[in-house]
Amino acid sequence: MKIRKDRLNCIYDQYSNQENRLTHALLHTIGSSRWLFSKFLKHIVSVSELPARENYEISTQKVPFSHGDREAEEIESIPDAWIVDMSGNLGIAIEVKDKKNSLRLNQLRGHADRIADYRNRYLLVITPDLREPDKIEELRGKKQTSLNIVWKSWDEIYSWLGRLAGKRLSGRPMEAFLISSMLEYLERRNDVLGFRGIKFPHGFNVQDAKLILNSMMEELEETTRKYYPDLTKRRPAITTFSQESVWDCFGSDEGFTKDLHVTLSINEKAHDISITVPNSAKKAWKRLKEVFSDDENQKELFSILKDLRDQVPHLFVEFNQRHFIAQRIGVRDGYMEFDIDTLGPPFRKRNSKVKEFPLWKHAIIDAVLHKKRINGQVMFKARFFLDEGNGIDKPEFIGTAKSTIKAFKPLYHFLRKS
Image (cartoon, rainbow, N blue to C red; front, side, top):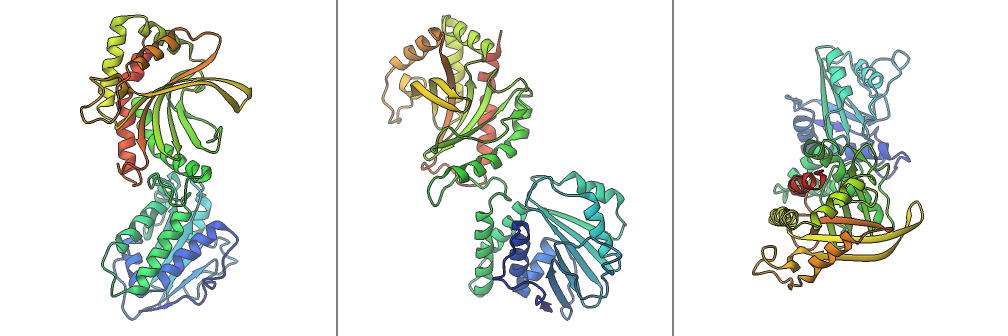
């Protein structure tokens, strides 16, 4: 097997377009090793047979040499990359995207037409989407039977490279270097990956936190809709009141400030998943005051909080008083937050390092009952500290987040009772 990649731009000759840079990096990675090249074709493209004596060419943004390609004037579409063989047997057109929901059906059809004269035709589409885009299914419904359509997410490419990196590559130092370099590049381009865990190897910064939180919100959307059908709307953008934290929420169509919502936030020390009672949620505040005015309702609330506490590593309660000098410029007037373990049994476990201080219970009850003519907000927060080794820095933490959102369901419905 011989691989020609002389029609690829020099590895140091980067494109200005970020999408083209992704393609360029991937093609140089697989094209620099026959071992990686064959693994890519078999495991990513699903090519079953690779003749050992065949010559292959890899190119980006160019028309390949093989006679299987059609004349440019016949078809205007040029894929982002090609993999073809000299004999005209195998033709792979590759379309790469670095934005979700950005595929165009006409473009994909044009790419398919480009490789119409190859005996074994593949259209490989790589996008950041979490699920196979609808345009892929549409194309499958209208394709010629001999065209193999393969969609992969950048997450799948990353995972595939990660599995290769986990193998013993002591005898393949070049491949180990190529794989680790591509993994590192994709991690820097984490906008194309799904949720990879909450971690800040170079220290916390708002921009990285926004990317992490956005990927998390996208993966949690389906779970949230399942357990909270009314909470289908996110904020227009992830913003922050400071350089210390970022947050977003799942709220109702009426607006997240008008009713209960599920809030997710990340700061330099912790990640919180919360049920928020915002200032303007009149029904929820009425309900909360009724609960704290009645002993039986209080018992039921704290029983629900006990069950919730058993399912999360930490549970905090917050009361926040603010005023605003502009739409997005809030000034904190008063703030109270306590670990619910401070209330003692049944919340606090025997081995807990948290000291009991039951006064917090009376403080939150008084604050809620006496809220009047102020902008006040209450939050019930499941907290995951970044340095506690709870798997928060791994992709699998998304499962923990889903379980936590589900665990809040009894509290949410209790607060919505009329």
